[in-house]
Image (tube, rainbow, N blue to C red; front, side, top):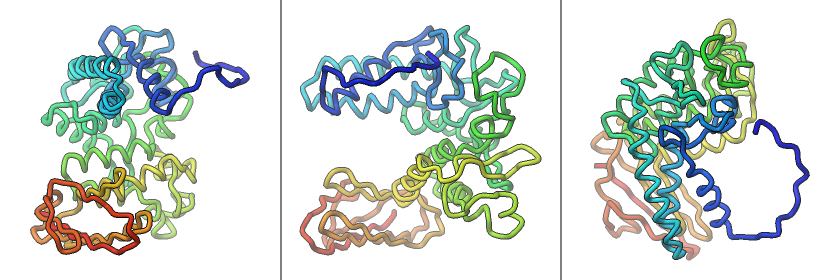
Length: 362
């Protein structure tokens, strides 16, 4: 359905948060002819609302994303004794992994299949030959083979990153007039918003994928590119960008005469991802429940950095040292002077005290 106009009512059913999520996952298990999730009238990119409007089009990106989500929820299902769901999700994830590898197009993965089976995001396409989010989630899902994951991201860096213009594009070339109609994304002029511009949400996934491959130098450089203040360092750049340099923009245009001009500003969804990429992906500070894990991916020439983490009533002062000039890798970890295994997590204490964590990369 392209639209549904209804007055919402309160359901007679109620359920836990897990049950809501599980039903959404169960709903997503229907696949098309290539064994991939149905795209319907849009996946992450809602502008591609005609790719699967007849119920047969499939989304490659959603396959990677679904695989990652299923793997996150399988342990939760097992912990709740929902073994039927856990087994069904495991079986589906295995089948997805096989189907996804078949979407390799030589230098990157496809983006989707139209209802009639025409591939989207292929080197034989006149428009949208490569789409960034299929490549980044091939990496982030952990499903793609290491060789193909590295190769796909190399294609993204060479075809979608324009460092001299400060842009990380979502797809290229933009949609214009040829081939099957992907949807209202074509209503945007080429190079605007999702239609071949920089869509910051997708660009941050690109940074995450680069870091997941261990390239801290490139990850930090790309993160620097996306930081809004770097689009307005002088009068000429500010006049081109034309947005506030202290908030995240949803998009930045990529085609003349508007190259480098910002679009929709104050975009909180991308701002949230940027916060996570900076703190969790690059600095590597992650909190899961009561556990802290430090696993940075930084430029090799960073000698050290410090983070103050306030957690409940406690404060954790974290110092990361990089004596060997690495991008990734943990040698030693100590908490309040006591060494702990470098491969483990730190059990945090809600004790009102200040604790010292020292991590040495190696």
